[in-house]
Length: 499
Ligand SMILES: Nc1ncnc2c1ncn2[C@@H]1O[C@H](COP(=O)(O)OP(=O)(O)OP(=O)(O)O)[C@@H](O)[C@H]1O
Ligand SMILES: [Mg+2]
Image (cartoon, rainbow, N blue to C red; front, side, top):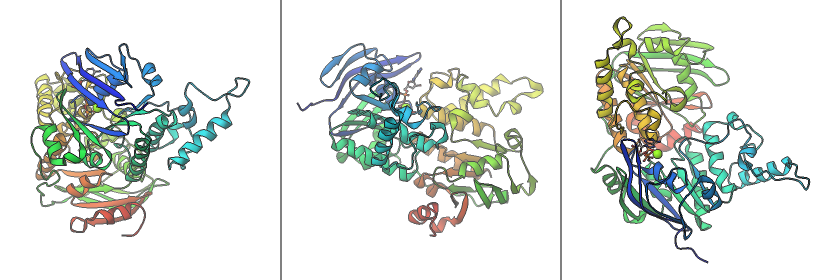
């Protein structure tokens, strides 16, 4: 029997303390459809899919799955209906193997009820191979894999479970372009098998690459649902943020000043070797490479988070060698890590405290925190970055994913660094806030701040950087001047090929 609607949600509402996250939202998913869900940070996308998946209870509205009305829905009930979701935060068991994660709770057994490991790993390996992921060993512990590979395992798991309603919440945020292609081929295959896919992303080009229809949410309300072929990026942005936004990546360039940071022969085997570059005050210097190429490790070494084997680091001409990040912070370097959940923020603490985390020494004369300055800093960055939160006293863990990222950025801006290292600063951040962040970069460079921008997202790094250093497997492939920027050339270098 052909089914008209896999999911039919009508009039869904949901409130959290101080926030109306969803207000009478309708959403329909049909078989053989990839349905994009878009909207600004805090628009309600993740809340909606958590209601569809039985994770949150809805306050109002009706929900029917495959033609059957559901009332008291739960994650177990959703799974029994053939639904599976890959959430923004990878939710697999990191201490278990890939295979164990696939089979969690239903291991194949021999006739005697004993877990048949050989069979489990064989089945798991076969599917990974089929999906183009044959470089993932089913017997590897999840934590031994790169974040990107962990994400691919999370993406493969629902395919393995043969789910026919799949939800992906920002799956590409941590993926390199090669893995994104694999993800897209998996999604196309699922669609051709008649499954229904909900796809959330802040990268509009992805919506146009693989989605059939799109639903726009704004401030918890349904704005419009339409076929992707009937719209264009400009219109989508306008529906999401309520204004049009041209030339996102065009910023005013400042003439570069003196050398702020100089690195020579930086080596830490086997991660990277002989890295050398200089970043001028007022310059945005790009560091491009695939996820896992060593970019993050190089940044961590400069910052004192990891040891250095050989090489020199100079700040404004003075040789330095940090053994702890606090020394780098004291010397005026701000660091925005890509792994924000683990390194950059304190989830149980308030938005206000988090924004001020690196700022307290400056606003605490004689060790007493100046509460007015603390409040002002929080207010400034909540406004400038349009952080969506009921108040600055709310715990940051209650903010949407993208708004947490904005708080991290606010923290670094509040600390008034002379050199700002930004590792993937706009992952998960909506288009409006992205352009706001770029404007802040523009202003900072005008003030002479040197920005070291680490990114695997080409439109961003090509749009913003003055020069780009390309890394491949810990090797420096070259420094490309802005006038010679070319997508193909950069991708070739990042893949270890000469341009
Ligand atoms: N557990 C929670 N407690 C309190 N408020 C919450 C909770 N979860 C979400 N919210 C609030 O509900 C609103 C919608 O959040 P949601 O996570 O659905 O946004 P989103 O569209 O997924 O945004 P993003 O693009 O940043 O991921 C936000 O204002 C958020 O702060
Ligand atoms: Mg979300």
